Length: 214
Length: 214
DNA sequence: AGTTCTATACGTTTAAAAGCGGATCGATAA
DNA sequence: TTATCGATCCGCTTTTAAACGTATAGAACT
Image 1 (tube, each protein chain N blue to C red):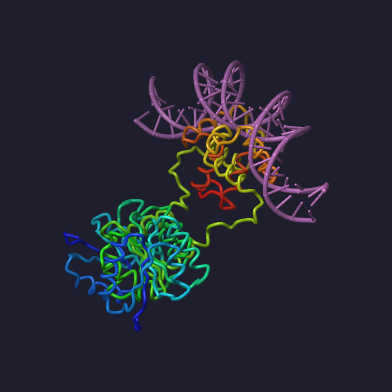
Image 2: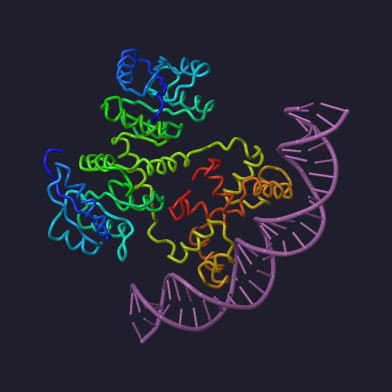
């Protein structure tokens, strides 16, 4: 973080913008703080000026922070946007992350967190406040293995996994060291058990049941 | 973080344990540092003593850190385990998170990161080093990307959709009212464009790109 | 006016998958 | 002790997919 960089605050509350501006201006490596009171104004501003870092409120009247983020990144895909929210709402942060935000902090975060966030995002990393991280990893962990009580045997799951990887029966046979005919038979049995008609059905089944990841 | 708390270091490298012990003992809120040189010894130790915080190496001979974590959490599900790894390997951290680790830091992390990690985990939050966070969110974002900027034509997407539903080319042809040979050709072109090898690859592509829902 | 892209259609050949059949062996459950 | 089940293997037939090529009409773009 050698060179000072410019930031922009997008928020519909003047008081909040003013407060955050004071905080940011107290940081030595920030040289220029712009403000936009809504998404439209921010997109306008982008035509003239590209800030190094953007603080984007999510809940705004008219175009909200998510939509604004999507449109801004469509024009300039390397913008570094930090989302600001009152709440650690799952829907908010997943949509904001998918929109392309690099960071996500709550409005009641301490200055220490804001600084950490800035440092990480400017350095090319992401940053999410601990409250949000808990949610993200909870999602990660719960998503694994919906598991349907071993409809398929281990070997069958193994074969199915390889099918999803795009291998032919012959390749699978070589890969796991059994005869091609055996793989044929396994495939046939898997089709029966999963009530699938063909390869497409097998892949759909495997994904739905966590045998392969998308 | 009022009360001082106890920690345990599980790592097969004596030198590393010693180094980390020195660092940890320099922190005012740590009162007791135990060590275990492998997973078995750690599980033994748990019978006598439950540390408030555990640093767990992943790559260990015999029972690795992932397996040790799983077994430890089976006995005491509220243990706070921080994984230590040399590399930000995706397979490592996803498995470690799924095993139930609350934090994940790299062995070349700075003291600042270690402290942040300890604070977060002791407070009940998770902590992951920035290198790993990038990977986690990359996974999150890549899961929902309905657009591939029209790599496929509308007709091709339509055909692909029906393929995923398990229809044969003949059925697709009847379904959308064109010749079976035309569907053959579409399928061939889709295989080319998506760089897929066979039906399995097509279905995976379609799901990854939001052409069908899982 | 010409090029490019898409959708349409057809022919051929080979590889793979799907749909039948039967069989042996070992572990496990009734 | 049977009976069942999973994993292994084999043969045969039909259907489907894959990989190649060619060609035409219309739309869109240069």
